[in-house]
Length: 196
Image (cartoon, rainbow, N blue to C red; front, side, top):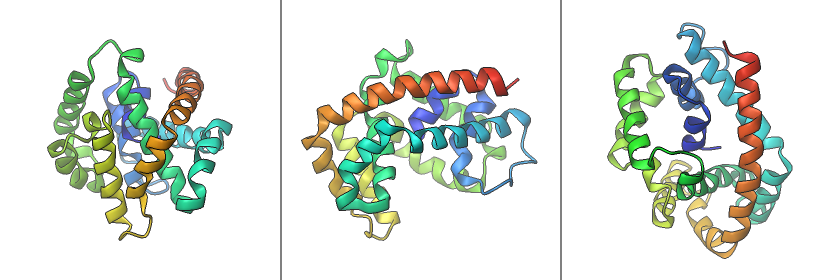
């Protein structure tokens, strides 16, 4: 899953949310110096990724993209799934998405000094272009895919995946909805069992 899903799945704990969001900036076990709830968020992020990568519905979505994008198809599916979460946000939260996103950005700013360096560098760009809110539109997802493609020095051609999103929109949306219900349940169970 991509940023918005990881944030949403963390619940109401600020440090758990920050850890879950920032986990991709942390290699291996280089998180032991961080607050306990942030460490828990990093481990939660990794559990979510493992569950996602092995889920048959996600594999079905990736398969649709694999011929054109190879191993980048998983990254694309993560981004497309965040689009459907943002687009259908009212089904998952009573807090309007613009308000939810602003609260999250404020939370990151208030805890800036404990963010990993990679996340600190990313944050100004994320806020300036309001990535999380932009996920709700196809034009926003187009910009995100273009940005990720640039970071791969145009090797991934991810920017072209908007064509598949539009062609198979209903299929991707249905797959996201079914999968996300499973992921919510998995995450809730993990938090209840593993996190104090």
